[in-house]
Image 1 (spheres, one colour):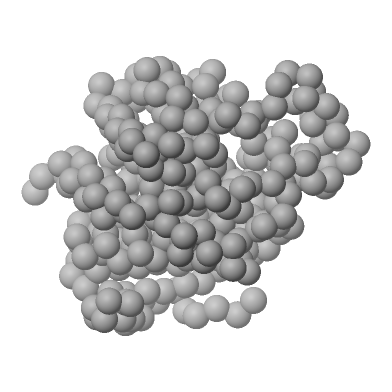
Image 2: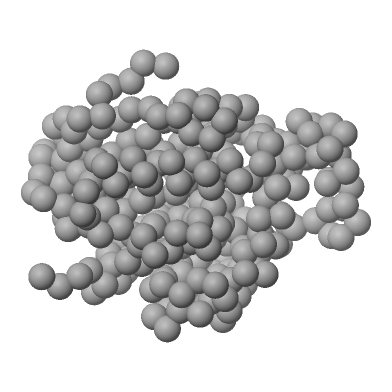
Length: 299
């Protein structure tokens, strides 16, 4: 895979606004996989860096609209495609160990320390990216001034029952790449154009997650619920009230169990899973950045 240099280049967004920097590249993640990443930077020196962690089956380019908005407010954005996602190496819908997602994020953050030295860092995780981010905070929360989780995969209404989960775990050992769970695109957004784009996106995994990935996913969900009290940094939890892919109860659980003195929970009535892609997206963007603004270090 040949990509552009990691040095920022001038771009123009869909609204015709110039002076937004964009760059892309690749690095070696866990297991020496080739991992794709991209940066968006404002025209002036950035106030802080958002480390964006996307959800299951999707990829970082689906956050272009969010990136354009936040660069307009003076933030830089760094995002990677997880192993087996988007333009990164790996099998779509499969991972041998959930730890590979977390370890790859750790490698990426070390790169950010070189590429954006001294910038305050805020983690932004969506869906499975919220779970990956939460697990990452258990080891690295001291590196961030805050965290925003959107529809984090902490609980879900589609979680298998005890016996079914035991069968999935067994299958993950004897037939780890067999497909067992497929996401329904209808639950992504109330905006038909967003759903159509999602369905037509060749970089989105439209197949089933494998038994190993599903077993690892739910193992991670159980871990974060068991260790939630270890999280103590400022955190903003955002969730669509009509989310059928990850349950709002998961964000409520985190809000109740984390140790953070500075924690905010906001549930948007009627919004579906991808609150950054709902018709009310700019309200969500503004809520997130207002929260971030108020937690930036003062000069």
